[in-house]
Image 1 (tube, one colour):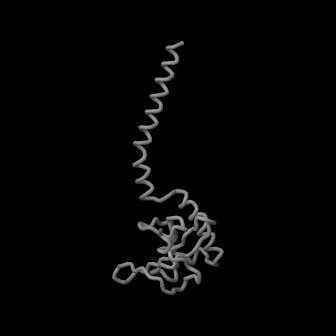
Image 2 (image 1 turned 90 degrees about the horizontal axis):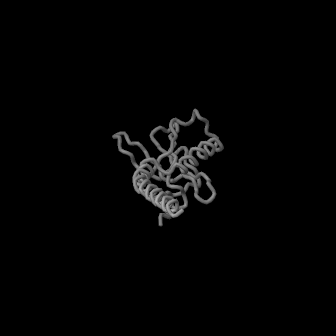
Image 3 (image 1 turned 45 degrees about the horizontal axis):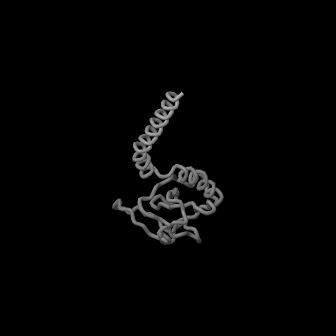
Length: 145
């Protein structure tokens, strides 16, 4: 009986050590994945909610040239999930609009900051009025603390 108990304890210790080693080895890979690709939950929620929001605003698929999830490389408004949704409209192909998803109630909001592709290939960030600007946009660079 004592031998069986000893074997079970040794087996339990080896399992615990194995699990800890796997966690230690996997952690850097998970962190690198998240830094490069963003949080999969945030991406899923943006992919689910932003296209529906745009449709509710009256946009059709034919109005949009490009739309996809993007992961900003800087800190944004803490009331929003970190990932953005970038939208380029066909009638304004040089302006990139960004939409975010609020953490509290999962509402889609347009960010005031837009990227404009200049003729020399440089991207300029601006907050001015454009064809598809919404009246109640949110500043993505506010409330960062």
